[in-house]
Image (cartoon, rainbow, N blue to C red; front, top):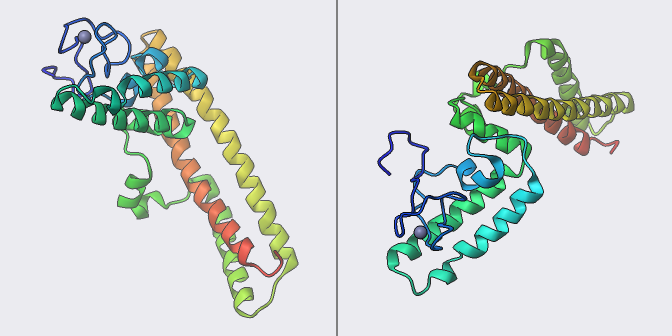
Length: 242
Ligand SMILES: [Zn+2]
């Protein structure tokens, strides 16, 4: 752990000094568990996602590797090992679980990658900086303004114990339209992820940077739309018509 790069894992097993080729959590040569500190999620699954942080991944292979490592790192296997190794196996198992949960989902995988790349992204950042993140994307300003008026109208109706069927079906259509845009955004995310991977393969760091910026923008828009859909669906579910 003497490397200056914070995310780089030790390259050799602490016990037998063999090079750690597969997962840095486990020595393939002697089977000893390795310290988990400083290892990121992509490195945990390096043999599946590549050590250069690929976004296009084979999720079936990811799952197989997860189960393989779960068995090999299970604390029961280290019941007779040193206290230090027992502690490492607990830490490695926790890291493995977090890594698997994050990497198997496209959006979470992309968010995690962008955080590693220094982008301020994700719910916790949105929470810290609420006013800035709640600004609608420029092209949606007008639509969001009108939508908020409609939602307010629906709330008023509810208070009065009334319902406006036309308003209800209008908002249902809005919800469906946003849902379909969300699906499109996910497709775009897959494409940008492929562009990121291609940049890595070609050693094109500018191409990677562009792809990363695009993905960060897509994720912001996605989060904004997701919240809108949630608000609209909540209003619809409590409306009398439903
Ligand atoms: Zn070893």
